[in-house]
Length: 230
Image (cartoon, rainbow, N blue to C red; front, top):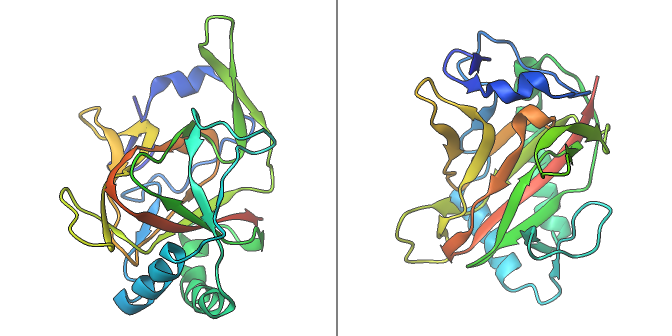
């Protein structure tokens, strides 16, 4: 393991791989990612969640540039209403300066907001937001190829909360956000269990490869954007 922030380490196999877009935040931060709490209010979270649950036009998400593969990803994409888009954009604007200061970047263009719903059994296997893994004939990872260079920063805003035993539509179990190559000082893989209203922000490169573990119960909903920066 090699240390990349006060409390987080990266697995050493990353050092032997070709990573064209390798970039890390200030190593003196406690964590190499941000968790901004309370970006949305409980009422705003509930309204966006209700809209998604009532959405009859959701479509299954595909892998970037590939056909639908439910062995790799099982996620629904919902529509964000104009009203809720305005809510999202106003709250994002309020935290933008904080994000830029943390990563020492200036945000420029961004993708449209994706509203991603995970019901029971839904998941997304390990992936990097800006790159594809390169594997040898034995299936071992040997490096990465950049396929979305405009994705430099990822933001994920949750409208439902993790709990071990969900009892309502505002909570889910399973569905943890796991950073595959990041760990704590004891070697435990960094795993986030979000609260409704929280925004998780991280660089989109392979150091921050991640997966969404299978949802066991309830409904996991997040608003995701990828940002270009300079």
